[in-house]
Image (cartoon, rainbow over the protein chains, first blue to last red):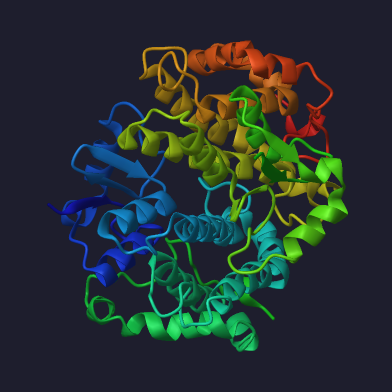
Length: 235
Length: 235
């Protein structure tokens, strides 16, 4: 039985981390709100009882409903036997995936530093300052952290030769940063060589290559998390 | 063998979520940086190899090192048999704990909306706007979410009569909000009755009551996550 994925249909957003892993690992999933629409997602989410997801993405797998991207990925990885098989190592992967979620939240806050419910245009001044700090301090701090994790494996991926959900997610944040901050990323090229390696190798995972070339892959856009605004990428 | 907890010694911060659960569950831990100092923490963190924590808190349990508060709590809960014993339910607890971590990040961003490495005084204008949105929109959204989770159990805690790591964490965020936003929280009293119930009942957990009355409990202060600034609590 395939897993149901519920996420906003018009943006890659946090849902894309789940899609990339499912596609790479050939995990069957239904992209529910894209087969229907955003209203169906809102309706589905509000009809749930008990411990509910705080926000999309979430998955439904039989009786199980799970929110939070990092938890979804670790759950699917465990279920499909796509982790390391060792608790100690899988805990490290899980931690990195939560680190990635924190980073994604910071990416979003570059264009929404004051209020997530207001327009970018209404918080541009703070966004300009925030993005400056993000480029100068936060991107290097996170990317060096992730680069070190890959470097320590001695291989191409975080676990060496075997790719995991952490690698598909690292690929996506590198793609997202290239889209949102092209000048900055170009100027920093070579600063995180192991991450650049992951970014080059993940699209070589065969089933994923098919997905990346397909129409199902939603392009980055200015309603999502990784957005390109010239003024936030000034060098 | 007791677990080592590494966290900044002068603030409750994210480390307090780990302390509260360990104290309530009588899990032996050494509060390493408080026995030594912040320099010892920085030195210890930088000396690690492989997949390292991005930031404190982290724990060391034999060969295992784990960062990210939510992951630490779920790991300790599993290890000590303090969860529900059912995977489906424990996943729900884990998700709530990550939701709490997201909320804590938003609390921090009320006084540091632009740059976590700069002083509050240098980002007061954006902080004023951010805190307004946080009180008007984000606190209700999160607290109603957590209140619903407790309500759905039909008992005092998220699992009913048995407390878990989620309840000790919910207690701490309610205490923190009362400290940081006393006017706001007073004006909203009764809006999240199940959470107020958790806040009242958690200190009744016997070993925790001893800790809360002890000198080991660090008071909220303006170097931590929950800070009180009059101007951020204006009604």
